[in-house]
Length: 161
Image 1: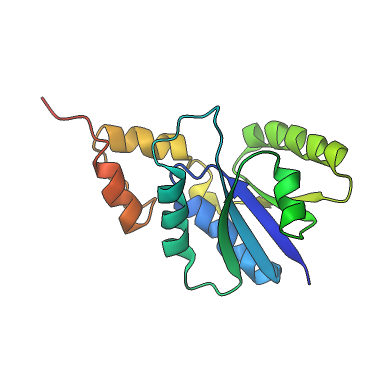
Image 2 (image 1 turned 90 degrees about the vertical axis):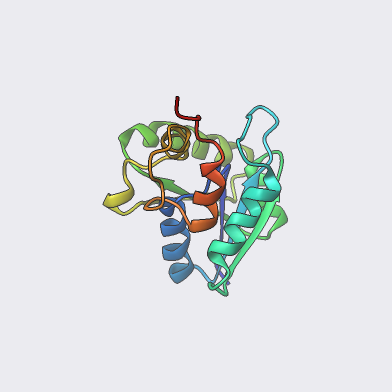
């Protein structure tokens, strides 16, 4: 049974992330979406909120599980019995960073492989940082995120003068 781990901060989850999960779920028997608890980052949303947003968005895909993790991605992969780490790529800029991660993961755990999946072209420019920036200045984000995420992001808007 082939399964994949799709790790990320998902702060917030956006349609580019969901696109990767939905397509991966058609390729792999099981996909574990793992929300990173990273003490070095200051996410806008708590890990509980991020996990909840993902659970709600992916609830209709029977072969997807959402969990959380802290520490090394390869350790999470081993814990969930998968030898595949799935990473989404938007552009060439992502590639250099993602290759570094993949090579380090291979060094740490040679039995775990990294698979790269390109996002659909309409999401190639989309990032969680851009979505948060748009929301901060009260720009519409509904096209890029699910309704619960859009509602939560509205609370981030800077009050207009």
